[in-house]
Length: 402
Image 1 (cartoon, rainbow, N blue to C red):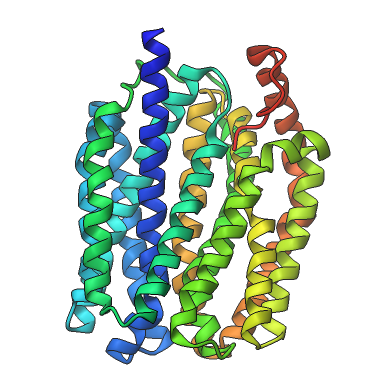
Image 2: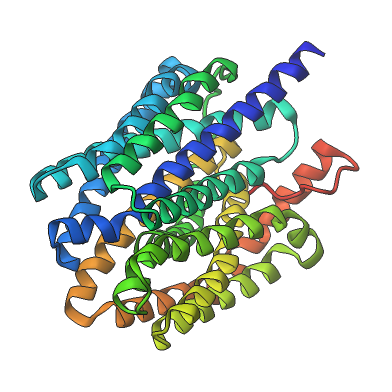
């Protein structure tokens, strides 16, 4: 009974940390147009600031895994989560472009470390509960992003200074960031790897490539949706966070119903539908430059992208002989590089061909998922579902790890 209560507390605490993570990134993404206007940055220069975030995140992700293995995700989250919340203040408080890039590097480093740590803790909680619950954590991330975008939009609309806004957000996120780490679980001992490295590497690479494309697309939509709505679609500045919020809202809704859709439709079928919706939504954004249509396209793309990564993480659990946790960790890392690299690459690309054509390129890239994803993922998802059925028995509501 006590173990159940501890696990339930840990699930709630880690869910709140996912909200903090999503909200922090949401503030960053929603204020990018304001940051661009404040320093009169070109789209290429803004892409440079985003690249600084990528560099920081990649470096920290390479280091944090070993630190979590040594000290545990609970200990690391007690340090990382509060620092992540406070790092929100940096970019908007910066007075020069060099300072903007520097604070973006710091924010990215803490963001990357935070993501790895909360997902590691999510796997520990999932193992303790002996049933798939990853979808609920991912939904909390999207809900956090939506909430922060709406908050940012209302604050800007009422005339709150951006630097004041980030300070308020940092303090608000600092409270759960400090409080929640006490309720998290301690990792069990790490088991040694099984054999079968080459086949495992090939399988992880295949699924990881799909995750890379999906998260590349998701990162572009998150970081550039607000900018696109203002600069291309003609939305007022205060409406920019609404564009980001619409995308996050669609993502959250899609993830909340994702497990049921997989059971009803099958993962390969949902993958085809989701890929087509993603391509259709981005294509609509790129072809019709009117902000209500842009928001409609973001809703469609958000629904399409919502369950791509959950499906790929499910497949990753069967792809690695060292166990589901190692497979999920490997695919998550590959995918996360795409999530962080997509926005700055599109920034630089748009400097040559314009944002609409850059978005059209992303739509073309996303079509790769709809075409090849079902064939690569189907056998691994089926193995994962059979394993879940054995573990969970008659429980059918959350068969697929998201």
